[in-house]
Length: 404
Image 1: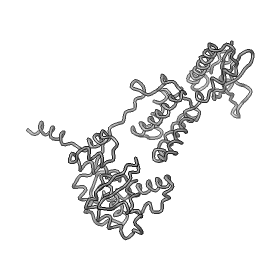
Image 2 (image 1 turned 90 degrees about the vertical axis):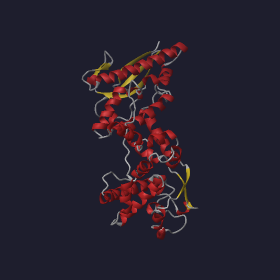
Image 3 (image 1 turned 120 degrees about the vertical axis):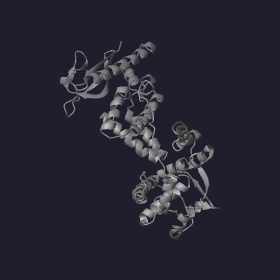
Image 4 (image 1 turned 120 degrees about the horizontal axis):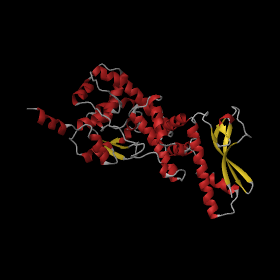
């Protein structure tokens, strides 16, 4: 009958003086070893009890991990012996160290990151790669396994993000979503059982905090449009912002890729960058003055209206993303000074153009039409978004009680 025991492997001392911990499998006087990836000093090992002494930092956690590995190995051994009494120590080791069961969080995370890159989801790639790196930094190792990622572990990670990384609530939620995504993949691959899942109503619950979306009012828009005394850079930033607003809050990534050839028959025809949806919009009367300001720089019909992408490597999604981020940062810098000159106290950024369209449209436009204008896949998303700007019913209800 085979036996499995945790031992300190003294034949491979590291430069720092520590030794690896291993599972020793013995069957028919033949022995094989499975290394746990954990190293400790000999003085911290209790050979008689086969466990880590209290002198080792986090000894309880490490002992629990070792006990878990030992129990899993013994369950595998019992299953094999039930099926075949003639198994060897080699077979036991092979079953315990199958390619899937031995995969770490970081290995599955890197597969996920690579898929984002392969699918050219570069904005998400940039943010999610940073979130994975933060988690590995917190773990202090790129070899953390999924069994270690329990509710208590994630709560400590949330504290780490809040105190060390100065993350807000929404950023912490986004970090947890990435971990949940990777954990779900591990479950599907059979690396970890669902019973260990650390997310759910009675565990780590992911719930987005409500965020206030504030757009400019009609009076503030008039002040912005009529403002004089702007520098050429500020004028350009205002033009791009107004172009976005006039086309239902078009995202800056789409605005910068609009070509003159996309405009014909009094309409703009373009493919949305985020989800590749095709949209045709009538050009509002006010937009022609913006277009006229850039006609002199037009070299051909296929040229971009705005100059930021004219030197971009259009075959490189990474270069397009980099130039978009640079341009957005530049616009926001000048929009801040524009707001000050116009006496607008609200934060003015490129994204606020979208909120401003939502605020001014209010309940004037049917929700189905707004869904198409916003390019939302689900009308539920449109309803939730527009709820930030429709206050009429609440205001009238409040007035009906207080105006006596």
